[in-house]
Length: 140
Image (cartoon, rainbow, N blue to C red; front, side):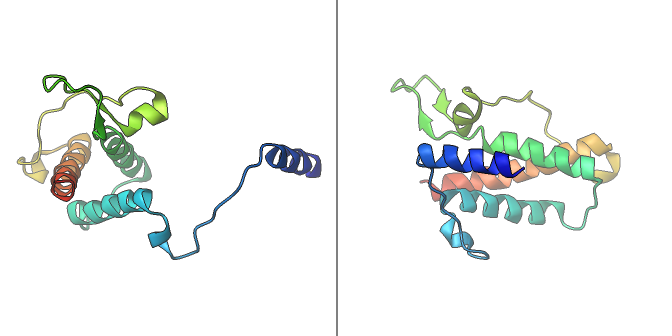
């Protein structure tokens, strides 16, 4: 183990890697990415309320939200107003936009008529709607 640590230390020194740490309990030092975390937490609390999910169900919801947020437009890829392609965080993560299959809106269907997967989808749709309204209001 100590050999690995010394090799890692040597490599980091050679590459001149510098670490910057955020002080504990100081999310204001995180800047833009911390604002994204705050937005996800805020909308999760508002939409999910007191609903309970298994670990797998909650992880699925978080993964879908991650895909939605990493598909948000950052900057247009062309000056053509008819071209709707935009640079997204997905381009930096996987080299292309993160896309998802469109699903029917379940936001108006009562919960007692939904299956588990549909309830998860409904929560993701609610969060996307709230987050996108908030995001566009802040950027206009």
